[in-house]
Amino acid sequence: MVSRQPVLTLGKASLLMLGIGTIALVGLPDMSGLNLLEALRAQPEAEQIPVVVYTGKELEPKERAQLDHYAQSVIIKDARSPERLLDDTTLFLHRVEEDLPEAQRRTIRMLHDVETLFAGRKVLLVDDDMRNIFSLSAVLQEKSVEVFTAANGREALEQLQAEPDIALVLMDIMMPEMDGYEAMRRIREQPRFAELSIIALTAKAMKGDRALCIEAGANDYLAKPVDTEKLLSMMRVWLYR
Amino acid sequence: MTAEAVERLEIDLLFEAMHRRYGYDFRHYASSSAARRVMRRVAREGLSSVSELQHCVLHDESVAEALLRDLSINVTELFRDPEFYCALRDTVLPQLAAHVHLKFWHAGCATGEEVYSMAILLTEEGLYERSQLYATDFNPVALEAANSGVFPLARMRLYSSNYLQAGGKRSLSDYYHANYERTIMDEKLKQSILFTHHNLATDSSFGEMQVIICRNVLIYFDRELQERVLQLFDDSLCDAGFLCLGSHETLKLSGLADRYETVVDKQRIYRKIG
Image 1: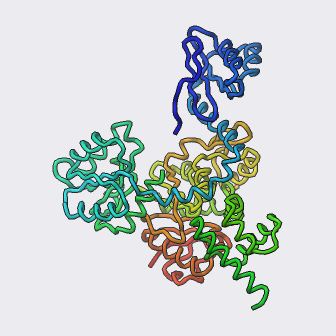
Image 2: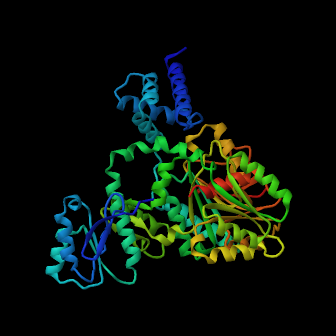
Image 3: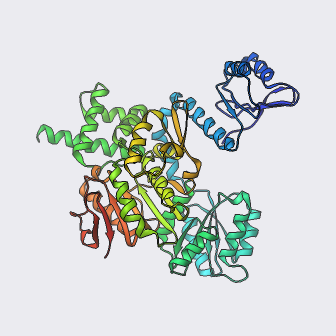
């Protein structure tokens, strides 16, 4: 979403440019935070950058007053503070973003992006039944999806390791060697796959079985035999994020 | 042809232009409310006819953008119509408690207030952990706003009052963080919400839900589109699933009416039986 490049190096700190504004985390070994802020403000390119101060230190009124002079917001570290910091930063950037004139023009153009949801996306089909693989592949390739396949859970894991950009997995449940439940559990064990969308395709129709899919790590499930239209609709939903 | 008929023709052509140029389909919107909004835009742009507006829409993105905003206005609040949420709490949710996994679909979620309200309600009733909420809309910018969970601080007093009237067990402020004149909803509320694009006029069912909420969206559609949407909902609802419409909407005139029984008439909550 944003490119990270060092902008300024002051003491041992590098300030990263995060896009619209720079958020400086203050609290450094070789230079006091206040000195850093003063130095920051002295740089012409950094003069206008909003600063949110995040500190573990209890601040005396005089220090607080000085910081307020340089910073837009001061947050004291506590148990809830990582979420607070993220929320606060989001709110701040939101305010900045809304003032941009370009923001007004986006609606009209954004619809086009929605229509290209499938093209070029990588999807992994996991099923031991080759007929299912063939028919689903055909449907997806027609939408310009790049299809990867695996015949069981173990192969699925291997594919995910080999292909970093897989956006969505269609996971059959009943497979030899490693079933869908086990495969999904193993996938979710890895933090980098936390956001990966997985749709379980299950021939089992009992309500409890569907809940098992979710528990194992599926985002959603669809009953077999698969209704292609429904599958595509569901995929659109989960590919949109 | 009367002057009125010509104006209706111009509006049809405007929507055709909008659809072909930008992909936004308002061709089946209920004519009177759509016409009012179109005429307001004509006046605001200082034009003298809908045909002139069509010209501007085709050649000037910012006018198209403005018209899109006019047509997308959806009045929404956190816990809007508190009695609806009371009815959910008292009548619907207890019947869902037996399910191991619940799916809710907020169709036409706009900027998301309704789905965040549901997330709060489910949290307080202990059902959030086993729920997946889908929040869909045809407008990508509204979706983006909904996904951000950021709302104006000035509205929070009204929303807090709504929340309490809806039977809220805590304080609305427990669910948001405020700063810079805005509030942002707690990250925990967003975990089981999927904001995603879906066009009720053209897209298909994407799953089977226990509850579908579509309030004050159908009133903007003509009868043909309303029937299409209700059929889509019927295809997307499990047996004994609940359909919730807006207080000025009804299932009664639909061809599907006999597949549903009324659970709470005043709040337009129906359950699928057929």
